[in-house]
Amino acid sequence: MKTSDAMAEILKREGVKYLFGYPRNALLDAAAKKDIRTIIVRQERTGLHMADAVSRITRGKIIGAFCMQHGPGAENAYGGVAQAYADSIPILVVPQGYARKNMYLPYNYNSTLQMRGISKHNEPILIGAETPHVMRRAFTQLRNGRPQPVVVEVPFDAFLDEVPEPLDYTPVYASKAAPDPESVVKAAKIIAEAKKLVIHAGQGVHWADAYKELQELAELLGAPVSTSLPGKSTFNERHPLSLGSGGHGISGQLWKFISDADVIFGIGCSFTESSFAIQFPQGPGKRYIHSTNDPVDFNKTIRSEIGLVGDAKLVLKALIAELRKTISSNRDATKVAAEIKAVEADWIKLWLPKINSNSSPLSPYRVLTDLQKTVDIDNTIITHDAGSPRDQLVPFWKSTTPLSYIGWGKTTQLGYGLPLAMGAKLVHPEKLCINVWGDAAIGFTGMDFETAVRDKLPIMSILLNNFTMAIELPIMPAATEKYRATDISGDYAAMARAFGGYGERVTKAEDIVPAIKRGIEQTQKGVPVLLEFITEQETEVSRPWLPAGK
Ligand SMILES: Cc1ncc(C[n+]2csc(CCOP(=O)(O)OP(=O)(O)O)c2C)c(N)n1
Ligand SMILES: [Mg+2]
Image 1 (cartoon, rainbow, N blue to C red):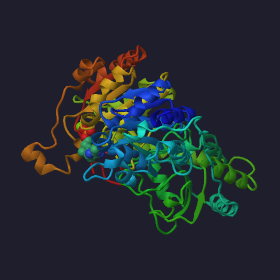
Image 2: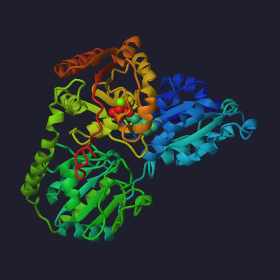
Image 3: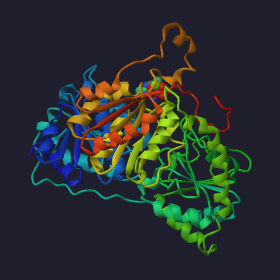
Image 4: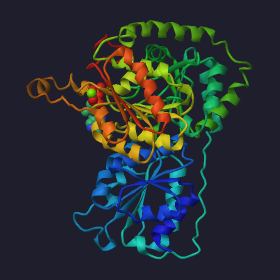
C-alpha cells in the first residue's frame, strides 16, 4: 500500500472521523476511501480551527486532523496551528511537503522546520516504510502529556512510496500522571486551614473529565469556584458556589473573592499572565497551590507554594480522600453563597442600564442577555471571538453543562469562533451551536459561512456589527479621526443569504428575541443562520477594579 493509504488506515484505527483540509494533499482522497469524512474549507486556518473544536468537544476521544498542500497551503495554516499550540489543543497536522529533493531548497517553505515553534512534536515521513513508526510517535504525543499540535510533513513524492503489508500499527495508549502523595498531604492541610479559599479551575478539568470531583471538592469545603476562559463550563455557573469565569472582562463577585482570598488552589490551569486572563493578585497574604499536568506552568508568573503534577481527576480524588480524613461532612456553605449573591447583585446593578437598554443602535449587552434568556442553555454550545464580544459575553453568560462554552484566548485569532462552532456542530448535531463575533472578526473567516452551508452545519452566528473595531477606538484616535482607519462596513445578513443560509439584520430591541427564535427554527431545519445585530460602538468592559468607562 502507498504511504497515503497507510496513513488513512492509521487515522481510521486511531478513531479519526473527520479530515479537514484544502487541496492538494494525497491524504484527502485516501481518507475518503476509508470513509473518513473529508471537509474542504475556504482557507486553511478555518480547517485547523474546526479540527481544534473536534478535539476540544470530544476531550481528545476523536483527534481533530487537518491536511493541506506544500507552499501556500502550509504557509496559510500557521495561524491555526499557532492558536492550538498556545491554547494547548491536540490536533494532527499533515502538511504536504515539497518533493524530497527540494525540501531544503531556498526558499521553499519547510513545515518540519518552520512549524517547530508551534508544535509539540514535528517529524517528516521521508521513507514511506517508516509511516507506522512516525505515526505511532505522533499519536503518542497527541494522547500523552500536554495536549498540543503534532506536525507530520509528507513530501509529495513520499506519499507514493510503498509501505510493507500487513500494516504494523496498533492504536496507542493515553497515560495519566498522579501527584506525589507527600505534596497532596501538604496541600490538603493548607487548603483545609484556609480562611478564604478560592478554587480556580482551568481546562485541565475538561480534559480529565473531572467535573464531578471539582464539584465534590467545592461542596466539601464550601469554597467558591472561579474558572479561566478555557475552564468555563467546568463548573455549573448557576451553582451557589460559582464565581463565574473571567478574562479581560470579569464579574464583580469573581474579582472580590480572588482579591480577598488567602489561598487560591488552581486545578488544571496554567495561571498564564495575559491581557485576556484574570490578573491574579500576588504578595503578602496570598498563597497559591498549583496543579497542572505540565510543570512548565509552575512559577511562570504566579509563585506557588506547592505544585501538584497530574491529571486533574486524579489530583482532585487524592485531595478529597486526604481532606476527608479530617472533614467528615460538607462544610456549611450558606454564608459564602449569600456573600457571592450579594456581591453579584451589587455588581449587576451597575450593568442593568446596558442589559435592559432599548437603544438603537442596540447595546451588545442587551443582545447577549436576550440570547441567554432565549436559548436552551443546557443544550447550547457557545463560543466568543477575539475583541469586545468576548469581554461582553464571558462575565455575564452562565454556562451550566460541561463543554457548553468553548473558552479560549492564549493567543486570539480573530475569526476563530465560527469554525469552533462549526466543529462543535459536527460532533453535536443535536445541540444549538453559536459563535458570537464582531464585524472585524467576520473579515477573517466569514467566507467559511459558505462551508457551513455546503457541509450542512446549521450553526447560529451572532454578529455584533458596529461598523468599527470598537476595541481599537481608544488606541487609534488620531488614525480614526484623520483617515477613518477603524471604520469597516458590510451587509453580512445579505452575505449569509447569498451563500444559501438564513440572514437577518436586527436594529430594534423588541426584534431581538423574535429574531433569535426564528434563527433557532432555521437551524432546526438544517439551515445555517447569521443574525446581524446593529450595535453601539461599545467600549466599556466589566473590570470591577476600574472606574466605569476605563
Ligand atoms: C488575526 C488578528 N489580528 C488582530 C487582532 C487584534 N484585534 C483584537 S480585537 C480587534 C478588533 C475587533 O473588532 P470587532 O470584531 O469589530 O469587535 P468590536 O470591538 O468592534 O466589538 C483587533 C484588531 C486579533 N485578535 N487577531
Ligand atoms: Mg466591530
